[in-house]
Length: 258
Length: 258
Image (cartoon, rainbow over all chains, first blue to last red; front, side, top):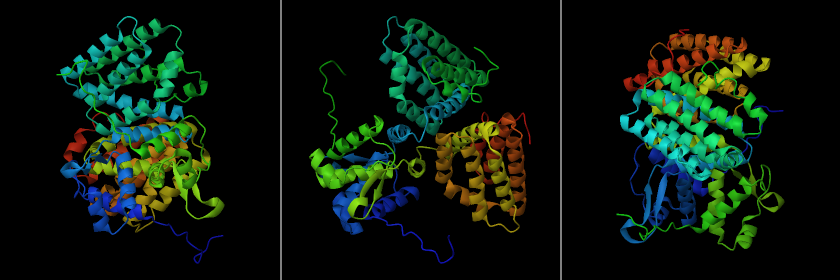
């Protein structure tokens, strides 16, 4: 039973949260920008009237978020700088929450497919010729005979990230990278399960070639369909999770079969 | 010039990072799950052989990531629990990095449109009748005469989040919520700029009705198109950023005009 005179939980705000809030406010209103140096821990302690450990806790959180970078050392270069490197922070966040089962692998694959569709379509409109050369060079490297699982997986990642960067949407590219990093362990198991490794390399490389060709030709719709099928089929081929497949009904249209 | 005997930068790992890594490892390998209680700070200090401040810094980072929840107080209920609440952490991360210009508003709108398209399409397949009732109730509330900007904005957010939750992709729903939170300040400015408020409420409400109807009818393709147009056109109507519009060429297909 709630009524107008019901008790309200008091949210206890801890000291480091006040420190965090003041730094965040200066970032949000533009007083602090990338490259700016924060006051030293000692100066923050004085300016804010809090303990050194509260300042340090706030700074550690901002470091973990990729917002500031600690410059260890002494003298003029010590202290922290505002940095702005979200990818690792995003990836750590997603990976841990995936492990806590808040996010399912299928959820993640589905979001990744959406982002990759969009990236491939936009890259088709915006990619420069050196982006295309880079994609083709990566495919050549992936087709080296006797390529190892680990090497292939890294080059494969770079192929997809190159498309995302060519689309010039930094958020989509960072999210894609973070989603990929978050499922790295899963992907390694998936690769290790493949029986016909040479056949898999050939199939994936053919698909990569078709995707690169569609982007080079500026055919965004085709590139989007190809990349969506490529990802969905990879998980179908390597995953034993039948439930995954059933969740792909929408994001993987069947009208175009490469 | 690099060669085989070139010096390698030594990455300095600080004590709290070791603590963080050990807790993260237990989450990643499943030894720690949502609801589990972590050892007290004092016990962690003893078990890991580190200072109390290092333990506390690691715990603060995990709290900021929505991974653990501090239970302040003494006795049996003190200490931290594994929680798993990613939304606020994601939103804070995105908002700060947006302020640091790593992400552009246009990037964010584009990613949001992709996620909303996918959510609307999947909700069309999976929504229950009470999801539909909820959507219609929200639309009715948004059409109350003399509704204030702030109230409308909140109900509007709830409408979109209801669609996302009905799609049963927790990651997509959390990302959408975080993206929305990250641009809250921008949206408030956008709403305040609207000259013909009643006209805007009518237009948005008509669009909401069409989206809800498409979802209720199970027409995923139509729902996806409608929601994409709805979002893109809102930004077009309220934003003075012409550059935004030019970036929507792909995600907002023109073939269906609601």
